[in-house]
Image (cartoon, rainbow, N blue to C red):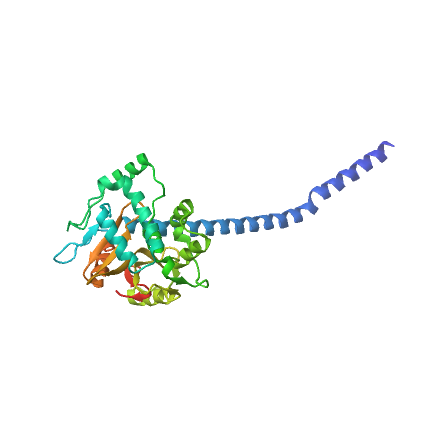
Length: 322
């Protein structure tokens, strides 16, 4: 019985060794290979996502930095005549000129935002049409004043200002491709303010979408790409959207409207309305010619230089103007 028991025990041990050794080893190697491959794929995908996200963040920072570098522009022989629309007569003048070219609802909506911004910022806004001096702004003091007073609306920017003025007088094709990756701050402000309905929000994202392009450093060539994209829009007959288009290649070559405003007739000259940035004020600027407005905008982005891309260029509606 003892010998029989020993033999049974040895057989059981041999079976256990075979089961825990040779057999599972092959399965383990296959499983290991599969596990490593799966891990590598996951890491590769995650790395790719992180890289793309990092490029997008860098692109946003670059465009935001360009906006902060905007410089007051001086026309040859005469500084532009600028108003922040703090004075009642200036605000009324601007509203009347805009309503002569655009539907009143959008103008009234914008003027509500102008009043809201100026209610806190007014002590630090010195520009009015009676002065022929380019203003400077203490953004820190303006932001502090807004924080203390509290605002009815969140701060807006140039794109939101422009769209509010033009939305009732233009048509945007539903087939326009949308890449709103760089519009996250615009979207947040619009969502908080509830200034637009669902369709208007969609049209806003289409109008200011990032546009894929090639690597040409020639602004005229890039202007053709932007003209093709903006040709999908039907712009107002009596007002123009004048924009500064930036070429960026941090996340693939693309074009993006970095700054924009609305230009309307003002007697023998023109009136340009803009919001400089989220933090900085609204401006209404009188120009004798359209070309003076183009030069003003071009000069604002003169420090936006990158030898790897085309320099900033100006579009009037869907037309490249330099």
